[in-house]
Length: 476
Image (cartoon, rainbow, N blue to C red; front, side, top):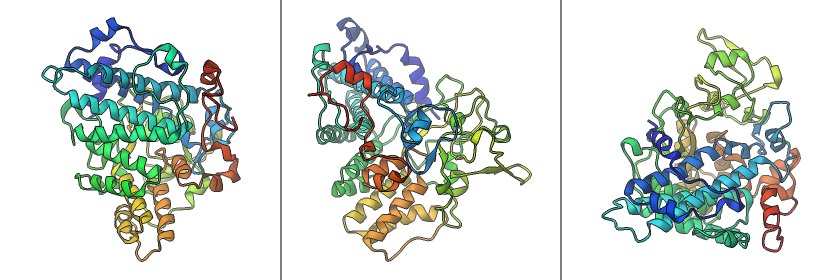
């Protein structure tokens, strides 16, 4: 089911680490390069090294949704999660530095792969084009998260020296997006539509097209977003009949709705702490769901999240909860111990060892594509067509479809549907920022106008020590 995890385990120790310096851009030695990049498997293993860092990064990526209006951190002690929740975080937070280092670590590895595979004989490196495509997708993916988090950032598309790294300034957002789009256009042409066996979990053509659609939508290039997302709708993806099956971890997570996940597996030291972090500190809940280890009252629903669901919405029960129904049909409410008031059931699964959960993080699934497609169609003045895509998601949720809406009304309903369908999957904050609604929605709960971007890690500002080419984001 998660065979790519086994490849990560086998190859991670063989990969060359990055020096702890400015954005991890230093080249590895020629001897190491010669030893590592000889066979097709060498390049395949090197690509897996990019996934390995991405897996590590996404263990905490969900925290970027804590400043949103839908997500709360209910643990009372002071830490980055609480500071994100109440907008008191600073420019020296470890989360920002680890994200910066992880994403540039992926970029470093992708650049190293691309520089060494160029000129290789395809008769020896039989999957050469696929390796290039995967590396470019992963590089683009890293840049997309970086630019959404930090804004202007250094753009590096080749292996560079230490001296070059220290002269590298922050590139404008528009230029970063040009590089992202270029990489994804190249990737989609040479990625397979699907994998089998041990390769299941690697990025596909559908993932490249869907991510490209998201990039276009973020840039408000609705025409290209519509075109690209429409292509994804013709590739055989389909909504699962039962929404709850998306979060049933006893079943295969690579189903008809799956497009791209960050892969995790328990009992192999390749798990995550989503279940533990999101489980309330309530003994009855922990016993019912068989969650061992510490729990964190995090990524929990705000009070407002309980008020926005229509009657009969089949998604509500698994998305937001203030208790559970036991095997005898008795409802057991949370006790409120240690501040635990609510939780999402989306990540609740048996965890034998604390912090070793098996739930994948869903980066792109087909419902997300349909809602992005609906948004692009509506912004292009095709509201009736947009409702067809939107209504597929609503009908699966047990709701009536919309009809005869104006563009403005449809826009608000599409935004609302994303909020409901994709709740607690890391989308709300970025949706609010990209649609220009973050200040209006979040200023009443503490957001300042400059907080649409997070601060550049203070360590990186100090290393560069050159505000002319490497300034801090305004306000930080």
